[in-house]
Image (cartoon, rainbow, N blue to C red):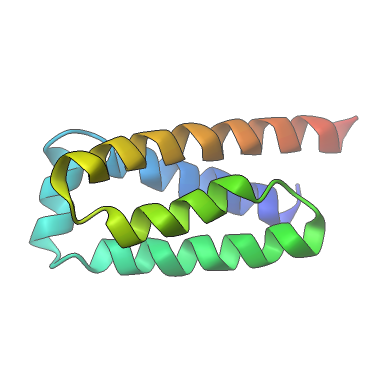
Length: 100
């Protein structure tokens, strides 16, 4: 498995966790919004590997935008959910095409 695909899976699952109502938001607030900064860095690293390995980039770009705007309560939840879906679908499609 390519590094970019593994990172797409990891960031997608992390975004899915942050999209869980009250649990994800509570985690972000209790940690002083640090998870948003960590996710920003993870999305940037994933984007680097996606460029390097010619994998889909849209999910990582959307993740960077999400990390910047997720402090807004309802918008943050919707963006985390959308980003998780896009990242997980990108990872599934990339992993599938890599095996063929």
